[in-house]
Image 1 (spheres, rainbow, N blue to C red):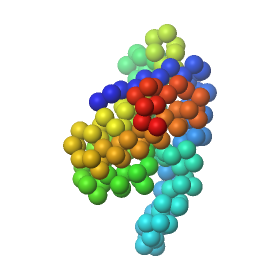
Image 2: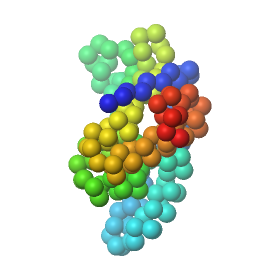
Image 3: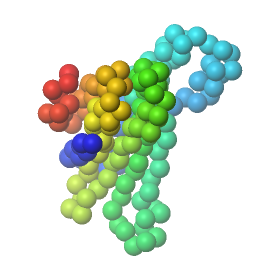
Image 4: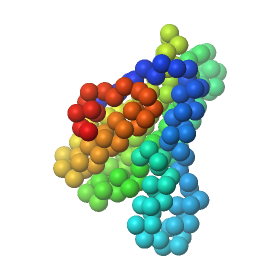
Length: 165
């Protein structure tokens, strides 16, 4: 596993807003309707493209800051589950246990100096642990998408991701 922590260079709230605009929330109602209607996978793929303009969707998020303040902590952290079920299904067919790592966990947090960071485990390193080339290829695709998202957000792309693009 290779954890990527990237200094953002702007206040947490500003970067969080930019991130959440670029990675929209999962449109649960829409996808539940598609399931209920027995939609084709092609229809799901089209809806996914519309829901994920930069390759990813937020399936869940939680701001742990207020809870941790009760324990006396002042630093802030927002956690997300970010992914793309169109990519996940390409790995799922090889082993449903890939759902251990799909969607990806990400965090936007502050360090003791007040710097904002974006952190995520490199997808390829997570999915390569299955030892299946089909699953590893899905991880490589997620690395590529992550590199594109970081570029869109104006963040530096780590060399380990840039080598995949």
